Image (cartoon, rainbow, N blue to C red):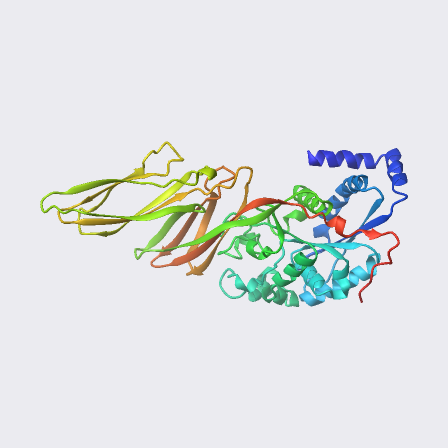
Length: 486
């Protein structure tokens, strides 16, 4: 519906009579907003990577401008675009100064800047603004990063072992310039924090569905076998906690440069963010860890874990058979009642025989008390002990931990944080089709004997945010020209 509305408004703006009315209506404006969109490509990239997105933003911008000027009489909005090639294998400081020099030479002195940087271009834009290189901080309204290596990449294990720096120079970007060193060792989180607190930072992120997924194994090599990545950058490295994050799906590092659908999505998200529309941002909800160790018998051990639910209650049962001659059984109903206001459902239970007196003593039967009632969290447990024997059982009951009505999940991130080689995570799926259900089913494996791993998982939900960047960059008509940095 939004796209249809924008198309209708854009079409009206192309009608000569209509445009003349708009022009005459804005002749007596009292304030002006001049937005300068500056596109910055990534390492070993060219301006063509950003061309489709730049064209799409220019296609939609007139409709946003018209609606904004209509709702704000006396305001005039002007848009300029700068999409140039930069030396693409230099260190981040040189790259930032090149951006500042380009802005000084090719943009008008007035108006605010919206940087849209892909990969190292986004990282360099954050650096330039946070450090006020060329006085860019004075003029910047927003920095948009697309699949940028915000965090230092040397913290992420690469294929074959070794450091990201060596891998980058030899294979990924095949460059001995400063770009690999900056990506490997410079963490942009503090730059991002400054930009987010003093300006605005919108980060687009994407990645594969599981660490060992073959989706973006270009040339048959997974660059980050322990992480979910886009073929070049782990998804976790593409943002930090201060950004407004938009997850746009399972897409490769530069796919937006050739996909009209992705360019369309990003253009509307960016323009919505600027002009006060709602943008669905990814927000962390909960996370945890798990791990496995293979046995001693040769082969491959496989596991499937359910994570993302919430522990409702835990407890312990202990029974002792006082008879000298009779076997004895006990039937217990383990009760748990989730908070009624959450209307939650059961997820799973874990029952562990932690102590027993010997053979033929233990758990005889275990099940949900009412298997067909998903909101009944009670567990039926039958245990048995030999004469003078005892049995001890520890138990946990989990509920799904659904999001509130109206809320929806966004994406997940799973990675291996420690372990040996020949161990990995093959598949990650949402546990159900319910958009409020944050649980994950994770399939993993390790070669025997004794290979192991420890993993972390995170789940995120969507949160609607409105930033209305344009209202903060209005300039009075009589104001002096913007200050230019050198």
